[in-house]
Length: 183
Image (cartoon, rainbow, N blue to C red; front, top):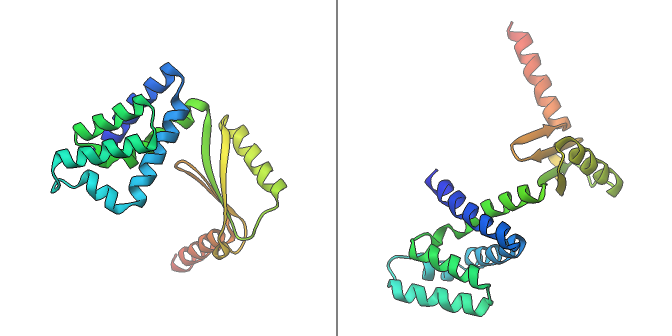
């Protein structure tokens, strides 16, 4: 819970600055790139976050990284602030929360669509349009397949799950029958 509060606080602050100077999307890209780099490279993560290494040595690693990536001056300052406050390990969580806030700012919602078989593009476009109409936001839809659904689709938008899969319907029917037998 504490990690979420930390991520939220720093992400909100960076987004406010991004809104003021019109660079919110640029900061999203830079922060996301740094977060992915650290996440994918465990040695780099250790070099930046492990308190067993000297603080000055870890700081030099971060300075070198920031210089090599050619980040904007504000992003350099932001990352150095995270390091100085002992929060550099939270850069991935901050990036995730920043993405969520930046999407809200743009009026975009991310959704996932899982189907038993590959859906035609027209069907995916209709689903995207319907979700967009219902939410009042532009929808970025991540489409995937899961044969275990048997048929139908499962859609997730944030915490909302719309499950129209045959598997779930069969499970619900089984539960109903069990309750009917025991009554």
